[in-house]
Length: 228
Image (cartoon, rainbow, N blue to C red; front, top):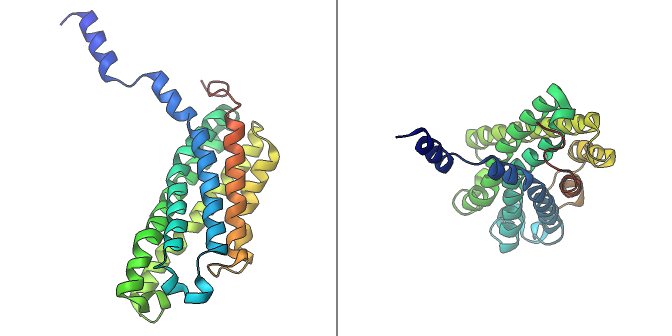
């Protein structure tokens, strides 16, 4: 095989830099869709899912809950892509701190995706076959399950806060969007966490707005302007 044939074969089998750049650049659109999806999900959770009428366990079996939780799962899956697109625009300006903030946020997103997958597929199943687990009447099983859930959201929140701080330090995106990202999730710690309550929804709605805003501004920043 000649050198020219080897080069041609490599060009056909290896992904192009342009294709990778397009994927990363599309992360801005992923951020917009992810932010709007999580905001819509929590609005549905607050206004439509019938927690008060049916109770939490029975509400898991309704179509409105399936739509709400499905939007959250979609949002989280897209968030991993969105973080790549948002970070790429500020990677050089964010420095080492920004890199590790991105890593923690990405890890937290992966853990949160597992939690949201459970909301779509596990909670409705338990509501049918083991409602005592959801009501807290079971013994060891729910404690073990809830321990895993309780670890996911704090790691995700820490990652988001660090990523927001790195975004402020980089100065590539508007400061207000980064500040909103930082305060959106911690504010839920001090509010009523009951599903279907406005207090439970407001923080994640604000997070969705901040994420969509960052995606919007990322569209205006050339992917190659802050990275090599």
